[in-house]
Amino acid sequence: MKLSELITNDNGRLSTTAFIQFFGAMLMAGILAYSVYLDRANVGELFTTFALFCGGGVATKGFANAIRKRGEGE
Image 1 (cartoon, rainbow, N blue to C red):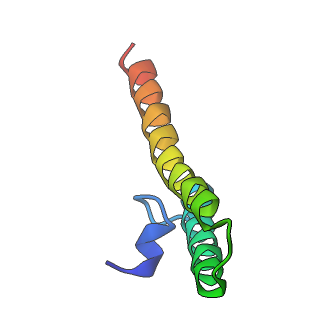
Image 2 (cartoon, helix red, strand yellow):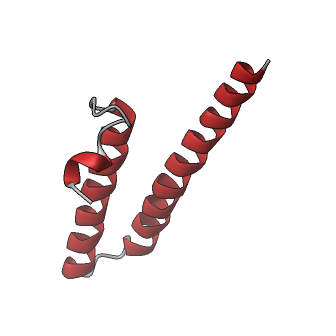
């Protein structure tokens, strides 16, 4: 898998949603790792936020795709 496949659509064009989700997750993972390295007290809260961000992005995308397919079927 190429890195470009993570941030593009099936047709090869850049996907804004995928770009934001991918680099947002990378940024949050970096912040989480840095907080663990510094032994901050808010690591648990950051991990919860990170998990909700990643899970919420997938759930939102799946919900939007389901609604779009249902609309195309009518």
